[in-house]
Image (tube, rainbow, N blue to C red; front, side, top):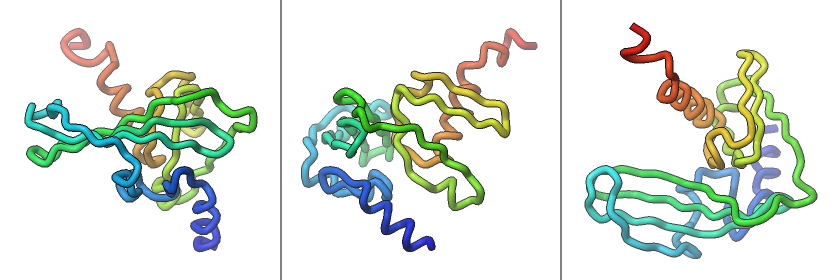
Length: 157
């Protein structure tokens, strides 16, 4: 069953990018524009790779990946590059075991995310667009709530 799912995921590709694999595992260097920029962490020269991909029945995306060989800093950014396709649709993703948390997804900036088990609902625009795993998305939500909570710190003492 798992092999069939992995085989089916390979159908979701664009510009030779396999969206069933992590961003780093895709050959971005083949089609990417590469340029040097100062690292946001150590200020030494780092490298940004940028490419455009078109996800069938969704939209075009601009993916930027930064890495610094000096301090190891990395960042990724996904920006919308066009209108959402008329054929885009809502996807419900049940998480039933630990392997489900490792699934990669693109959460668009217009996505509404609901986790009914913990009474969590994120409106459109929350976290912007992001390409990550389900686990990574949950971690981003947690970190964002922790960093932007007005009831934590000196004023809550």
